[in-house]
Image 1 (cartoon, rainbow, N blue to C red):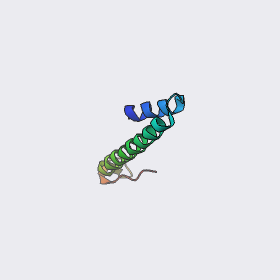
Image 2: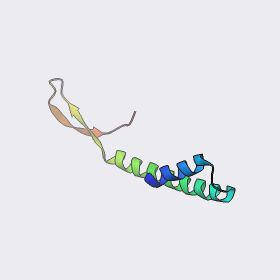
Image 3: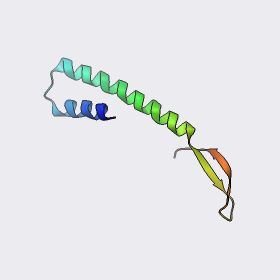
Image 4: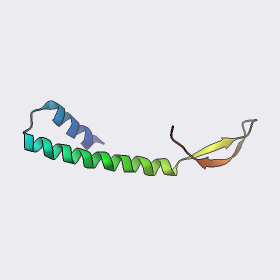
Amino acid sequence: MAELEKVVRELENGSVSLEESIDFYTRGEALKKHCETKLAEAEARIEKITLAKDGSPTGVEPFEAS
């Protein structure tokens, strides 16, 4: 994530050449995809605790991000 933030700062700064900008953009896209994959993997491992009306836990079910 830190490397992706660095890429974004460099691109926003505008002090790099066109060729470097293209390289930074390409690297940023790869890092973004990597981060999205890691997030999806983490979300797949999360379970939501289900509760009875009295508030006691009854089990778990897959987490659905809203």
